[in-house]
Image (spheres, rainbow, N blue to C red):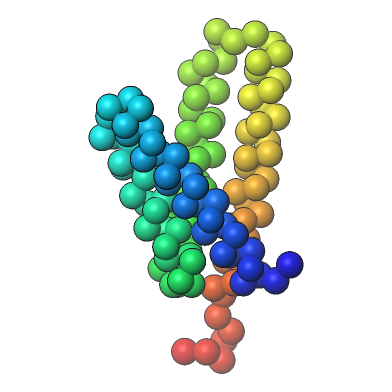
Length: 117
């Protein structure tokens, strides 16, 4: 698959993530979720239109997603069953690998040659 197509696909994933977070605003009646929805939605639009600045929002969302998962696991660890902990660690490994891989693809897409100004 071409890098350009993958970046557009990541924009769709980010858009879905943002829409889900907006749904959480209404589900839990908390505007705090907007702090997460706005970077997701703005980053998705930026990636879809291939704007250079959007890569930084993408990296930010990817980093915070992994950090949020790690924080959740750290807080919940002592209270979870072994089977649940194993599932969470497997999910986290997949999430981390996806975030790293997608960030590398986005980085390579926006990387400029030394000859470009």
